[in-house]
Length: 146
Image 1 (cartoon, rainbow, N blue to C red):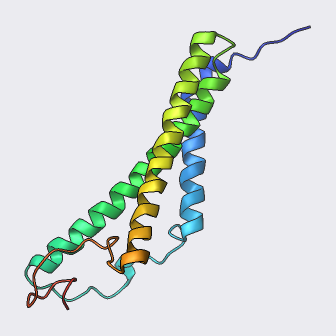
Image 2 (image 1 turned 90 degrees about the vertical axis):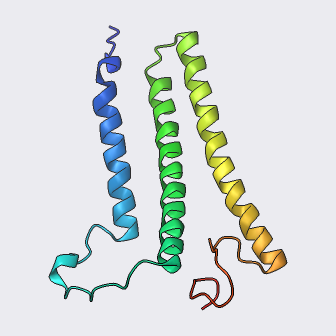
C-alpha cells in the first residue's frame, strides 16, 4: 500500500513555520527576546540638534541593518530552495529550479562573507579601519576625529 502525502498543499504554512523558528532562534541567541522593556526605564535627556555625527551614526546603522537583512534574506532564500526541492515531486523542471535558487542563495551568502573578509583583511594589513563608516574633516566633532 503506497500512500502519498500531499505536501504541495502546505507550502505557505511550512515556510511560515520555518521562518518563525528562524526568528525565534535568532532572538533567543542574541538575547533580545527576554530583555527589559525600555519604557520601564527613565527617559533619556533631550538630544542635541542633529549634525554630522548623527548622520554618521545613522549611516553606520543603515549599513549594519542592510547587511543583516541581506544575510537573513539569503538564508530564507536557501530555506525556500530546500522547500522547493522537497515539494518538486520528482519533476526535472522543478528540481532544476530548486537547484537554481539554491545556487544563487549560496552565492549570495558567499559574496557577503567574502566582502566582509576583504574589509577585515584590508583593515589588518593597512591599519585603516574600513569597516567603520566615517566622513568628515579634521577639527569637526565626528566619529573620525573625536
